[in-house]
Length: 122
Image 1 (tube, rainbow, N blue to C red):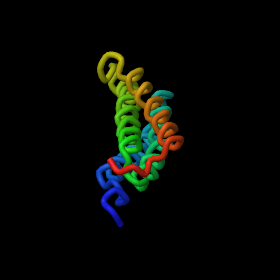
Image 2: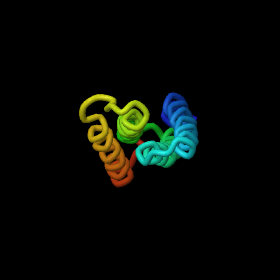
Image 3: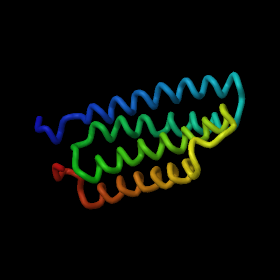
């Protein structure tokens, strides 16, 4: 197994943490209520497994960039929604839209990597 084919352990750890936070957020949403909290939980629970999958891909530059952009976008988007629900304030101005752009950009990079090939080590 070459270094480029090893799992990205940092990304896998981030995915695991986001999955756990997603479950906790879903539990909080079910007890406390709140649409923003439920949306944040859903986003984490959908994207965490995708990040696990990306962490296991051969580590080309585009896949790595896509994965970390997805993770950052997820933290900003879901974090802002949860902060708005729990603390009645924004994480910081424009955090959710920036996170949303990060998520969209990450998925578009996954698409580009699939089209041009991700096996180039980077």
